[in-house]
Amino acid sequence: MRKLTAVFLAFVVLIATTAPAQAAKGKKSQRTPEQVFKRLDTNRDGALSLAELVGKRTDEKAIKAEQAFKRLDKDGDGSVTLSEFRAHNAGKKKAKSL
Image (cartoon, rainbow, N blue to C red):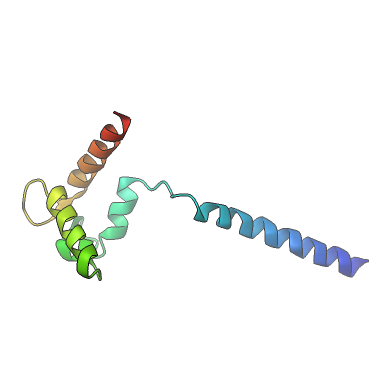
């Protein structure tokens, strides 16, 4: 009987730990612009370069990343600051609400 109880408890623990992870797979995680910026800023200098944004992307994805970089770099200095990144995301949220 103890062996059966132990197996049952192990099964319950397994389900309890994997169910939230599986449920989260179908949902987009709600990351803040700061979290996304920090993840993209691989050299941790406080600004995004074109190389950081493009990363290892190739072909069409690289072109889209370059276009996104140009939209984000409002002052045209070749880097995207956190404030430029926030401003872009604020504009996206405002457009969604309209």
